[in-house]
Image (cartoon, rainbow, N blue to C red; front, side, top):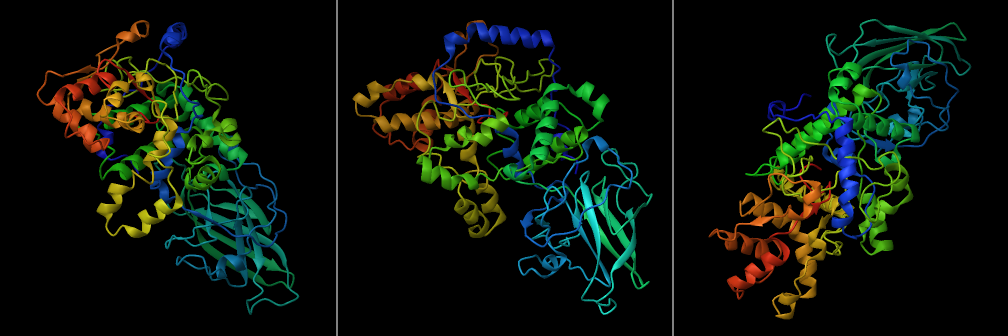
Length: 584
């Protein structure tokens, strides 16, 4: 579960930004931003950490969920065992309609994993926060009904098995005792607790908090009204469970966001002293992603076969940091295909509607239409981290922010646009649908084909919609080429939509250069410098126009190619949103 060596060995910055430096940046930005802000489209609230979790599904054998309704149960007892990490205990009411064990064991839709074979006694495990869930569907190594979660109060209920020949019709339970013993785990582990001391509970219905992802031996011995003594025992798997962002309870959502917010506020040095060695400040992970994705030679974690495993590795380490703060949380996922029908039917493909919804605004805050910063909620005016200037391997923007070198955004705040340079995006970057994911799953015949497609149509457009791009490109003027018949009005939108791709490609081809450093009081001088004197410049620029944007340029003269480069690229500054660039 440790990150691969490529990440373990990579130099990452974890800058500790002084309060005075942050205030200086805020003062500079507030004093100068009027001169270079562009009046672009409404931006969305923060959407950032949940997207990464869409592909980060490898850590600790997270399981998917299948909800099944069932019959009601008796009231639950109080927690009789010790309460480690009691500050994180989930308070929950009596489950209304938990699934019955008969439904769990007989449903034809459940997986080919293990099946419970009960004797005279059977028991039921319930998470009272999500009483209708039946967990473990689709996982052949798991037994549905014998799965619990770490640091969540679990209700255990013993019942007589009416189908057993050892149970009489007039028999009932009198007393029960329980023994819970952890079977797997590392006693020297610094990540999760391990205990070889059994927990003993009494009552037909009890509550217990499992405190480590592990296999537990659970046994229940009950005496009946006829004096008969019966024992049942099973192996129970304790694992973290990922849920869709909007399916989380209010308490679980707040716990996740609270832990995330702590990671934005507490430095790694202070956090390790408080929370342990797995804690890292958020900037640590931003720098890790940035260092890998913004190499001059290539992108080390996108546009290739490592996209899923690399992001799963980063997400796993990020999750350990969250759990150092609150061991009950896990990274949720965002099933954005749930939004696709609404976007198509109600908003004509305009996916910015997602970020104007009550859920997103109440959870992540509203974003200003003027400066495109988060203006309400817990993430109001969230700052972008500063790169560690003392680390020669650390990647950062010319302004010293944790952004790609090609991002010349002078703003010190997290920025979202939801449009590409003010252009309509829905026709070019269509929001991923359920059919996109179905085709990816069932139409790809090889791992090679699957891995090359997974990050594009089924996933990539979400980054475009969340981040978007601003800067000079919103005001680009190619009217002369339109008047001369080389381009059309629609072609202008095409240029705006694909400039973020051409920008990276031209930089990696070393046909454009970014300033080494910029200051907020001289942002007008912080622009892209084109190497037009280089013999390969026109060849690479033609490649972007024909190969990326799809223009037919066979009859274009060199002068026309240079003219377009001057109009849209050279001596301009582009501001990719903070979810459409290498630090996303």
